[in-house]
Amino acid sequence: MPDLLEHVTAFRAAFARRQAAETVELPGAFAVRDLEFFLSQEHNQLIVDAPDADPVALSGLAAQSLGRRRQYRITMLDEALGKRATSALAAVGYSRDIELVLARETAGCALPETAAHPVGLAELRAAVFDQQLVRFPDEDLARQLTERRAARLRGAEEVLFLATRTPEGKIAAWTDLYLDRAAGLAQLEDLVTAVPYRGKGHGDTLLATGLALAAAAGIPQLFLLADGTDWPREWYVRRGFTEIGRSYSFLNG
Image 1 (tube, rainbow, N blue to C red):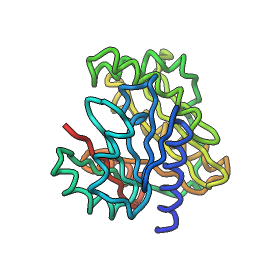
Image 2 (image 1 turned 180 degrees about the vertical axis):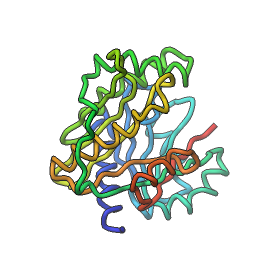
Image 3 (image 1 turned 90 degrees about the horizontal axis):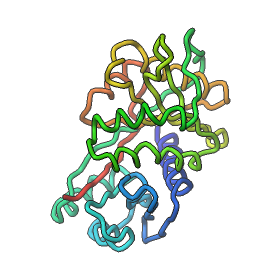
């Protein structure tokens, strides 16, 4: 699906630019920076959106444009360039993660009987912070990874934070939904179920709600990113998603 992948790639680059506090335009790439969320690699990274960028120059561009950081992240939206750049970046200490771009049509998707609902960041904050602490015991890092959702509100035409609850009313799972009617695309990002509530169908509820809301907005395609080596990719495939491409994320150190 080359045309769909091109649209998704353009959407991802535009989203990164819109949510950034600062952007630095570079040959074949751009850097995004945000001092408020300095510990978030999503908000402080080099994004390569040109397929003919020079792989040898990328590590230098990252250091030049992002300033002093403990680690540098370089995201390559073009699959072929990511493959070509792997050896050059490995030679200067970068490891590679594969991101699968998965998509499916939204036609015919309806809200589940018990749907997820939009919530504000203030309501979501405690649940997200507790879950981030499970992954990252550093409180400063966990706090920034929680609060950075505020920056995402700038990224798309409409940004919703969806959540499901326990019977007692506690937030059990959440995800971001980005809607762009003009592009005909929606994205689901950061679908997470808190550890105590896993295996109870919260993920299916979030996914079904996101697909239904995209369909209701007249958006024909919903995409998401999945780790190329982790189990959720198969979970999404079983729910009708197809791999349409790959991108690569490189991290040094």
